[in-house]
Length: 338
Image (cartoon, rainbow, N blue to C red; front, side):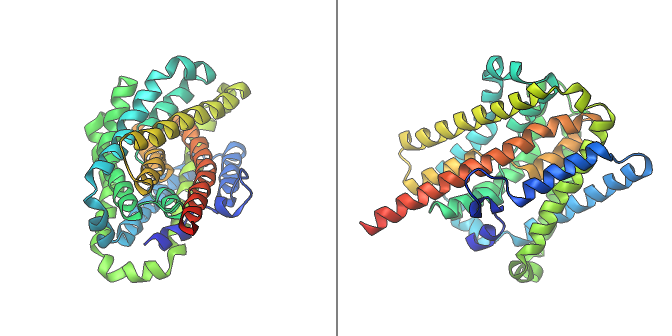
């Protein structure tokens, strides 16, 4: 199981420490394309249908590849899971609100809404598990926790967004948003998992298929979201200093979260393996789940600005955690050799 997720890890690990991976460069090119040639008219409508379909296919494939044995292997470690979920759905939102006097002056109001949305999202699956594996952490617990975070996010994220922003989602309230997200993400995931005995072996042998759909879905949604945002004047309303401020904001937020999860795990008496799992699962935010959720929760013209913090945070977390995973692995190797 760990090998499958390791195969899907972005190529940050094979590059010099803080250089972007190929997918990030492609993502930047997609944003540039949407800025220069945004989708309009009937083409924009077709893009919306296509992105909905490909995201549903993505979650179908993720459900099909999730091993039931891995779920049972990790599910008994309830104390670790509890602290990971608290970090994801309680600590992050509290930090987004508590650090407001420091963070809000760095960015535009629309970007800060995106930061609060980022704080409400579930954890990412692939990179959290892959980094845990590389760092010699508790991989079964990471599989269980990261997968459960996706489920919980379908319910918790719309509710947290409503609470953090003091308003209902654009689609008519948190309950309606939960229904739409469940239909687009949860239902395909469950169907895929039920069909795992039929197609699971094929997907294990063809992990590149999931990676292609995974990255392709993000590119489709980003192009569609930024097209609508550009047409609504995103870049005219976003000064350059605010972009640099957003990068600083993401770095501050990630640093605080990593510090709390690392030292918190040690104060709670977790083993080094469980500490690694808490750090890498509790500090991640999912772009795969986040961008489709933004399409449901916000007006199309606002999605581009809302997901911009998520895109930056995602890349920063990959680069920083790649270095941390390597250091954890070297420490484990040196202890094993003693």
